[in-house]
Amino acid sequence: MIQLLRTLGHLTVDGVWQVGFATRFLFAMLRHSGPSFARFSLTIRELYFSGVLSLVIIVVSGAFVGMVLGLQGYDTLQRFGSESALGSIVALSLLRELGPVVAALLFASRAGSAVTAEIGLMKATEQLTAMDMMAVNPIARVVAPRFWGGVLSMPLLAAIFSTVGVIGGWFIGVVVIGVDNGTFWSQMANSVDFREDVVNGVVKSFVFGWAVSLIAVFQGYDCTPTAEGVSRAITKTVVYSSLMVLALDFILTSFMYIGK
Amino acid sequence: MNRAILDLWVGAFVALGFAALMFLAMQVANVSEEGTRGETITLRARFEDIGGLKVKAPVKSAGVVVGRVAAIRFDPQTYQAEVEMKVSAAYPFPKDTIASILTSGLLGEQYVGLAAGADSEMLKDGDRIEMTQSALVLEKLIGQFLFNKAAEGGSNK
Image 1 (tube, rainbow over the protein chains, first blue to last red):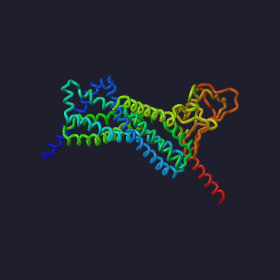
Image 2: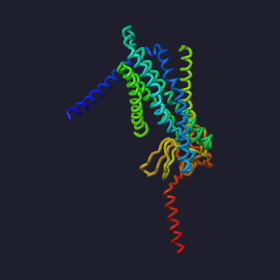
Image 3: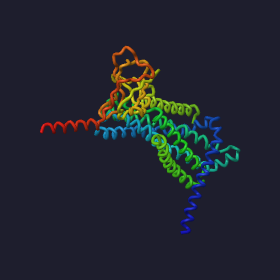
Image 4: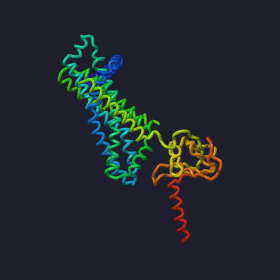
């Protein structure tokens, strides 16, 4: 019994300590973010690795998600004889939820894990310590550019995901099944509000970008500097960021759409 | 990797991202919507029952969108709904225009339909449309229909 209580206490203290450390880490990173923008080539490199290289998986999954939405939406809607609402369903579900969330999940497993592995290995091979010895701040030189690269590429990736998804839904709905092209687009334009849906989607993906990038760089920086520690840190990055994205999505959705 | 190639790829990526955002804004959300562009005038109308009319619902005349519903209020003096519409100033409507609440399709969204009259004077900004027709509420229609049927059955006996 005492043992159980002690374990519980240990877990709680550990958890709080981790959160506190992550917050301090975030502030340290923000304070040392100057070089990421002053020497923008550092951030450009990270934009390439986390943004451009994620494009293929984002585009392909966006297309498939959109096509599945087209098929399922049509199947459900035609029971009520309202296939014309297919455009609205595809666009709204992509813009509001699927675009930001699925893009963020893919981004976490594709780019977040890579960032954690890179920083973790740098730590394990003592490159970070070596930088410190040479009076180069590793947070400013290594961590912050990777963080900002992730934050900046996330909204763009989500927008690309939604766009490709809409085109995928259009392909299935209009080209394959034969819903009227004009109705598809006009119904979509009627029900989608720029401020309400498009902007809120971008805000969501921006928040997810912060969460995923912070978890990725923090786990890399905080990992045990061994092969096993790095692999555990990568697993944690993917698990924590996925959970974080889904939980944040619930909170953001309840503020954006329901709380009015 | 070569700096120039890196820049090129990132530039292409950013351009693609913004193109996607533009697509979402223009094609999907249709920011520049017909009938709400340019100058508008505000018209008011009182309805007995607005059914499921919502703010931002289209105002159509002859099927063409000429404006949007700007606000819906309840008037405690007359116990009627007061609907405020922003209609494009490019389309002036006569004073005896009839505003009715219609439904697009059987289960579609509701909109305000304007049927132009023949008066030579035009509605000005802030004017009230006096002749209105309320929304058809499906339950009332069904109730009336059943009532009529029952009455018929009674008289036949």
